[in-house]
Amino acid sequence: MNMKGKTALVLGVANQRSIAYSIAKALSSAGAELVLSYANATLAKRVEPIALELGAKLIVECDLADDAAIQKLGAKIREHYDCLDYVVHSVAYAPVEEMNKPFHHLSRQGFGIALDISVYTLIAVLKEVESLLKPGSSVLTLSYYGAQKVVPSYGVMGVAKAALEASVRYLAYSLGERGVRVNAISAGPLRTLSTASISGISEMQKQIEKSAPLRRNINHEEVAKSALYLLSDYSSGVSGEVVFVDAGMNIMAY
Ligand SMILES: NC(=O)c1ccc[n+]([C@@H]2O[C@H](COP(=O)([O-])OP(=O)(O)OC[C@H]3O[C@@H](n4cnc5c(N)ncnc54)[C@H](O)[C@@H]3O)[C@@H](O)[C@H]2O)c1
Image 1 (cartoon, protein in one colour):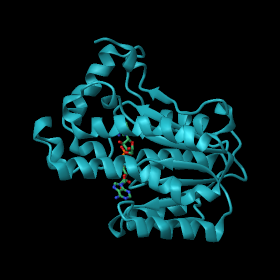
Image 2: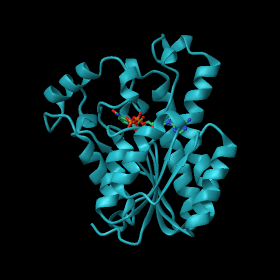
Image 3: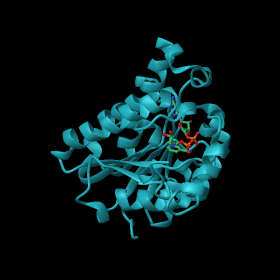
């Protein structure tokens, strides 16, 4: 795929296991220019070498919980670019103690944080970079099957992903008028920093090996390849969709 001359904003690289890293690497290999944004100063020592490796032209620290930080991110990008061809939102968070309690014990605060970081940040960023989105620009976020069916260890993140998938449809409609597409990938379980706080990943992966149509788990590169399809012109007629990259597991009843 040739993405020379295209610019991609990638949010959510924490380390080399991040799904955002795999997507950024695939974008860079296809020739796209990268703007990387990461959450906080602690991550800088991991993300700076990645930015170097991938030849990212701009790297910006931005806590997406903070509207002022999002405005600064937008201003920095506008200093260097007048168009964003691709936006990748690979960001989620819920306080770990909220994941490990019965769902009906969820706190108001925990619910709010999970929805704010895992869903609203996508809307907030798109609002901020709206003037940089042009006809043909494409936006991608990451979801999980816990949005649609109960995955007991996923708890509040399942509700957040359901809201994210609904937001993808509403964003696809509101940005579609100007030719901007918005889609999500619902990825099968992968070992990353985020999934370290979700119990039972190994058991899920073993079950997938037995039951999924492909009888195996997916890998990071497969998510990245589908991401390139959804970001590129190859999917020019696709918007508001949630595309499963899960070895087919979602089609199975058990
Ligand atoms: N790993 C999986 O099995 C899997 C499966 C399906 C979907 N996903 C989704 O993929 C996305 C990426 O997750 P990952 O698994 O690569 O883990 P990850 O931990 O590498 O990525 C999550 C990112 O969110 C960022 N983030 C959290 N709070 C933030 C804030 N306030 N401001 C800015 N950034 C913030 C983190 O810094 C991190 O870079 C998430 O949306 C996750 O839910 C993951």
